[in-house]
Image (cartoon, rainbow, N blue to C red; front, side, top):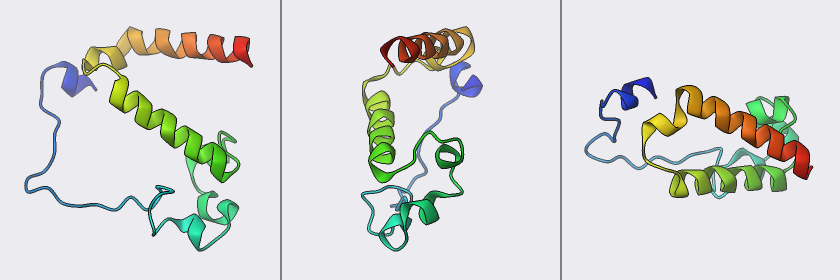
Length: 99
């Protein structure tokens, strides 16, 4: 984020290379298709910290991340420094209020 805020370009390799994300539940190679959810995701951050405990919660989290990427601002300053701290505090308060 600091490099992007200073104006450095953060982009894609050329030529573009197709990459299959094996932790994406929509992928045919996703681990939960061949093992239980607990077995497939036991080493992930979200599972170890009880953010996600089943495949539905994981899909919801994945959708929220994609929504943020598609609708959020492109300005890197929005995601760094004090703005990020204020946004995290706001989200934590909102989550406590709404349950």
